[in-house]
Amino acid sequence: MSLSYLPWHRPTEWGARPCLRDDREELTYDQFAARVAAAAEQFAELGIERGSVVAIMLPNRIELLTAIVAAWRLGAAATPINPMFTEAEAAYQIEDADAALVIVADGAVATAGRPRLVVDDIRIAPDGVPPAPVEASDVALLIYTSGSTGKPKGVILTQSNITAMTSMLDGALHLNADDHCLLVLPLFHMNAICVSFLATMRGGGQLSILERYHPTEFLRAVQTLRPTYFSAVPTIYSHLLSLPPETVADTSSIRFAICGAAPASEELLRGVEERFGFPLLEGYGLTECTCVATANPLDGPRKVGTVGIALPGQTIGIMTPDGSLAPAGERGEIVIRGDNVMQGYLGRPEATAETLRGGWLHTGDVGILDEDGYLRIVDRIKDMIIRGGENIYPKEIEAVLAHHPAVMDVAVVGQPHPTYGEVPVAYVARHPQRSVTVEDLRAACAELLTKVKVPAEITILDALPKNPVGKIDKPSLRRLAASTTTTSSLTQGI
Image (cartoon, rainbow, N blue to C red; front, side, top):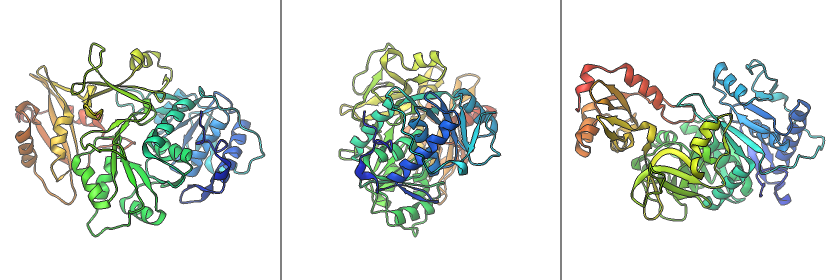
């Protein structure tokens, strides 16, 4: 098992190389290893041992990563918590994970009665205590799902899952010691932890951490730090693309960027590539597969409208309701196999058995594989709208609306209807520098969609609600749609 993402397993010649930096300090590989060792010794004195869980509730900074790896040095697991959580939200995760220690930004942060360690008090000078042997079966991370369908579930990821995922990423992206990742996504999410941090560490590259995202500050960091790649969500790329034309930056150091976590329109992908000059690789994955399942290849054809091919070492299938695998071109549930697939959900044996039934990870997403193995996402199974017995996939409607140059974000959800059960309604965020009317958008839909798929109502908002990871918060929009049902809205487009 290659554990070169762990600082005490890295090749000795890496010692003096730049490893991590944030807006406070910069560390070499040797310095990071020393910080990890010191923190691990302190955690051990506070009762952390093999099988313990350390909760970490911090904004993006070096100490967050130090704490994660320090827990691993003791054979313990880490569970990162969104630092913007309310006391109740944080308490749920702390208690569900049974955290034995909580790392916090200051002593005023509530920790559900569990012992706390303030970040500024983390030890930085080690005494030389050797690390515990790391086993492939050790639980490394408990990453909590967004909870869009109920209480968040803790996804159990082991060291072997992480080893598999980082190997797949490094193989697909050809990461090496010359690479430099600019981390902009929140570190309580697997994308930032795995794609930006661990894959970079495995290759011997360096990581620059941004505490928060702002479009012009991000471009300034690119120009100053000269990173070679970064990973972001469509909203970030939309913000960059909407900057005034006179806002320019030297992005020539970027050899590729990754777009994931939510669907991106063809206009967005092509617009970013044309304006900034680097290839944008759209991918697909979920926490339950340790982050990434597919990506448009860096060194092969990129098919816009798809999320690419399976990463090396993974198998992607399309499963029909009877449990058989569908041939190319047919739709069904996306299922995944590979050493990166989670062990299960913490304390949820029934949910684990349902999601991992038949030896496949059942994603709950509907997709189509073409003859070349490229995956196209059709929709979420649970997002499907059933209008009078007819299945309507919101993503098909969203794709039409997203094609309009004045649309920055779009979401389609079902609205209750007394006769048809539900009908599609759309929520649109307008591009700040362009104008559009509801009639314009309705006409665009009517031109390309059958009548039953044309949204019964289109609402233009300043911005669509997002969850902490940057995905559009469809549960909130469903509640809004249900609360605003009116007689007039039910007759439009029907």
